[in-house]
Image (tube, rainbow, N blue to C red; front, top):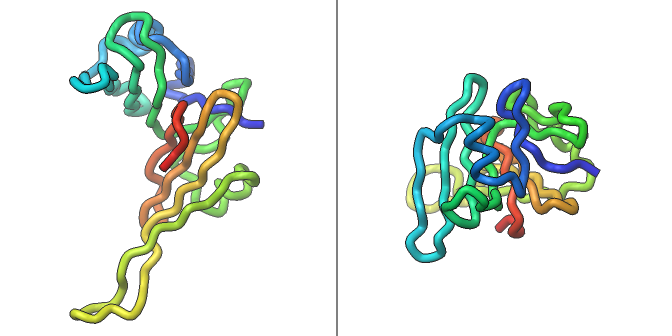
Length: 153
């Protein structure tokens, strides 16, 4: 079973449940912060030497735990990177064998009447004891990895 952690640099791994204080200690001050006025959840963006990551916390205090993480790599329990931005869909499918696959399409062709569709995106979705995670490709190119306590929609 694979669990989610996002490799932000060669030394820092952030995973679901990491507190805001821990993230700030490991990553420094966030570049941007946004608090949702309706539910109190806060989203913070960090830019590190190797990556950009967005983390949503359950509340905007030091003890608030991460409930969603978006970044560029997926690691295993030992912290070894298993999925990264240089991989294609075939590589990810071979690693995440049990993942469900969701494909998105848009109308193809030209003119007013469209009789064809074009594949635009693929999402590989998995679940483990920590939560849900997905690997997203847009028009055949790696886009991001997302971890969440909530099911992917």
